[in-house]
Image (cartoon, rainbow, N blue to C red; front, side, top):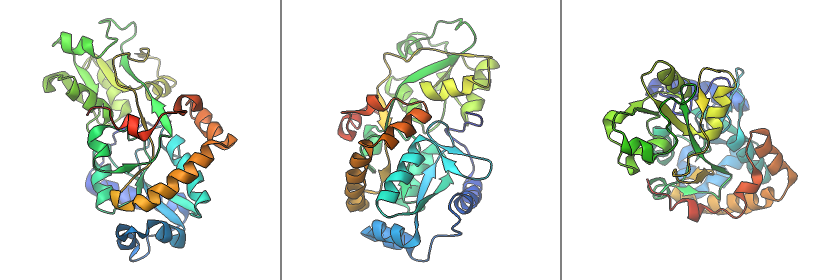
Length: 296
């Protein structure tokens, strides 16, 4: 997983600059046509996206969920599925815009992009603000700890039971919500900017563990043998993600869900998930309605 940045902390100006560059690299389209955002906001997202040939998508550059290569090509489990479903809808491609997780929903509702496909896990607070598609992935959580896990941290409960423990977490992420729901005090939370800085916080003894999705940590561990990854935490809530749309784009969401359901029945869906390390069987029978009940 090379250069993970799950909760990328780019400043606003940096996000705009990188987003514009990635948009051009990813699709070959230089800009959104005049009026595109306004038409999308008016409920014509499908027509707008088909006419302009792409859909603007917020991503985070956190493999295996999302990834941006050196030449700007956007991939990862979520964008690859989104691109495939969009093609079924007559939308030629997607444009990736890198943005911090905490800015994704505000940016969506401000019409800065049309959809979020970034491993933005479903939970009650998010589901009240956006319209999620049915799930594409289902995920578990783990800790990155020093080799040997010297403090034996294997659960969320362990953090609440020991106020001396410090847990690295990405601001705006699902994991921060887990700690807040568990009433982990702020002084125990070490805020980091991305996956690599979370690992460095653990290795430098600024944090006792780093909470992140199991797959993200395992991918980081492929390039760094200086820490270990725990088994999936049994007391962390199960969650998952799909594409997130503005609530005003309910007609697009319905069309997307219809094509997503058909796409899930094809071999290509399973191939995409398997390529990025996910088990397509885990998604079967899981609904957005279920995952939106997750507290946080």
